Image (tube, one colour):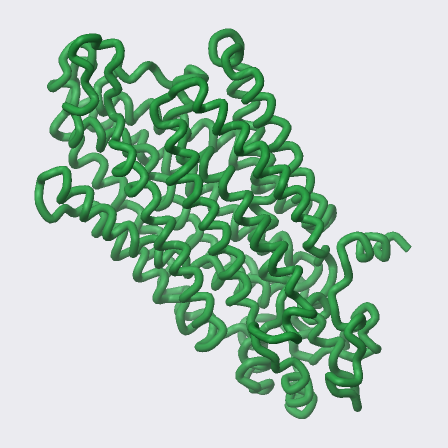
Length: 551
């Protein structure tokens, strides 16, 4: 049996949940990480590949608006009109926000497994459809692209709360943080492949379709074959999702959902015995008391008293983080020329520009973004979520402030240092709040509303990403020094706010989900919810828990 929750009145956990918490790491855990992780690989690829081809869309469909006939050096090839650019890059984020809320809610009402496959099918279908066009005019192409990318985002949104909740509910308490972070770390692999795939395909097309630079010949620099290239890049995003569909549908419902929400301890025990090397008692009588003592809805005084500040903490930190994180990712194409990772647009043809942007994105992701995710996986169950999040927010603020203060000198005299600062902001985003804001909502809240609370937190994050796409990105679009500096100052401030809002979030390392949420602190052999004091049921603060770990 599990030990008593801290201050929880000595109440034992259910045997099926205790078995999950204490189970050794097994092949099934690895399989679950891969199945859930491939969804995040697809999510990241689909969301970020648009950054590699958005300037190509500007060259193909808005060529005339980017030519300065009186001074060719002032031409801006590849620049989409601000409203179009914001729609192309931002509409998937709007869909993601809505998908998170809808699928998160149904994940709690219908079961995690029941809606898990729907998200994958929607992602695959809309990734393919994103490469189609109903017409050849700029309006028709952009309209079709935006329509299907909205629904692509809707499917991606569902993957956030469902994957996080499923992984947290399968995991043992010793390595739960690493398992959830490993699922999310596949986002880094997806970003790398978005750059790599786009780089390879553009290189192939460029080999067979050479063309002069924009400066040499405006019209001939935009190869007609490039109109196929961007469609292929977007459509490839469907295949990783389809590859894991069968295995995703074969996953059993999580034991926590089956036991605590459906009230079927026998089925929960049976499901876990099939996939994990454990023997589990059903304990149906204890389950009935456990379930009754924790039966309160999201919109209740009970939830507000126990978890209101935690939800505010997870939602605000994710919102503030994503303003910075998505601003950095979506505006890479505008920053790359400043750090000399790409040549000036007028010196390139359309496909050569895609190749250089993709190569730069690949390199930044490989050496800046990717390592941070896996350092988090290695250290999250040793350092804790809270400390990693504080360090990440603080260091991002430092490097963004340095780039803002020194922007002109970094751009003209110290480009290597500029590239280093830029890469380090990505490293500390991922060895920091980009990972921990995903992990914490999957652990803090009760089983009955865990998926919904994760969805609310994630949707807050996507609201921040929408601010980045429609607000911050507007400042960087023309490459003006003053506006880019302003954007960097804004991102520095948002990260410092994230640092301070982190103090609302408790540490979750080393405890069972029921201890963290207070669920097992409500129930003893002869004790109902009314018999436990409120202080016993509320998760301890991060500082209290960290202190207790060293006593």
